[in-house]
Length: 349
Ligand code: F0G
Image 1 (cartoon, rainbow, N blue to C red):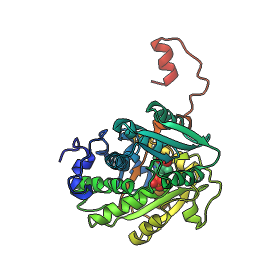
Image 2 (cartoon, helix red, strand yellow; image 1 turned 180 degrees about the horizontal axis):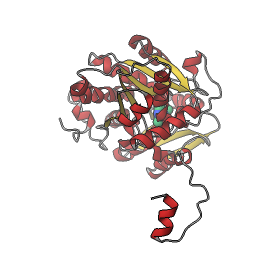
Image 3 (cartoon, rainbow, N blue to C red; image 1 turned 30 degrees about the vertical axis):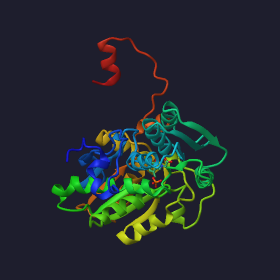
C-alpha cells in the first residue's frame, strides 16, 4: 500500500482490534530510509542507512505510538490525556490531543526541555506545567495521576504507545526487503526511557527478523549501562536525560535476545555525530538522535562492526526542535556590503 495511507490503516492487520476505527491521523510514519554513503565512508561502513524520524508530523518518532494511544483514549471516552516528557512526547501528545479534541496535560522537568518542543506543546494548547525535578520524578507523579483515573497516561507505560512504535521496524523491513534481501544486521538507536528499543525489537520479532539491537545512552544518563539508577542524570541530549527508564527490562531483553548491546557515548561524541550527519548527509537531527550514530562510529572504529555489515541508525527527532544546541557558530557576524564582490570574498566562491 502507498505510504500516503495512514500508518494505522497500513498495518491494520497487525495493530487493530476487530472493527476498530482510527479517526485521528496527522500523516505519521512513512519516514525516509536513506543509504548514507558519505557518512558510511567516513565511518567505514558500506551499508549504513538512516531512518529519519524527524519527518513525522511533530518531528519525532513519538507520533507512531501516540496516534494509536490517542485514538484509543478517544475511543474509550476519555476527556484528557497526560504525560511526563523530556519534550518530544509532550509535543506529540499535544498535537494528537488537539486533533482529537481532547485536553492535554504535560509535565516537564524545569529548564531542561528544548525550545522547539516547548513551543509545539504551547501552540497546540496543552496545559503545561514545569516541575522542580527531573523526568523520572515527573513520570512518577503522572503515574499516580493516571491511577487516580483523572486522565489517560500517554507515556510509553501505556501499552498502545509501544504497540504503535513497532511500525518503525516494519517500515525498515519493508524498505530493505529488496535492497538487502531480509533484515539489516544491526539497528542502532538512542535509549532514554527505553520504550523505543523495546518496541522496535518486538516489531522485528513479530515479523520473524532478528537484527542485533544496538542501544546507546548518554554517558551522564546511562543507568542500564551502569546497572544502577542515576539520581541526577545530565547530558546535552536532553531528550534522553533519564536516570530510571520505565522500560528497563524491555531494553535488556531486546539487547540479550538479539545478541546486541547497550553502551554509552559522551556528549562530545553525540555532538560530533550530529554535525557529521548534517554535513555529510544533509539530515538535521537533534542531539539525542545522533547517539546511535555516535555509537556505531565508536564500534566501527574499534573493529567491532564489519565494513560489509548492514546497519540502520534510527534518527529519532528533528534538529529544528533544539536550535540552541545546533552545530555551527553564527558568532557576532558583522554585516558586509550587499555587493557580489564583497560576498564572493566573504564566502570564498
Ligand atoms: N530520541 C528522542 C529524540 C527522544 O525524544 C527520546 C525520548 C528518545 C530518543 C529515547 O526514546 O525513551 O523510548 O528510549 N523521549 C521521551 C520524551 C522520554 O519524553 O519525549 P525512549
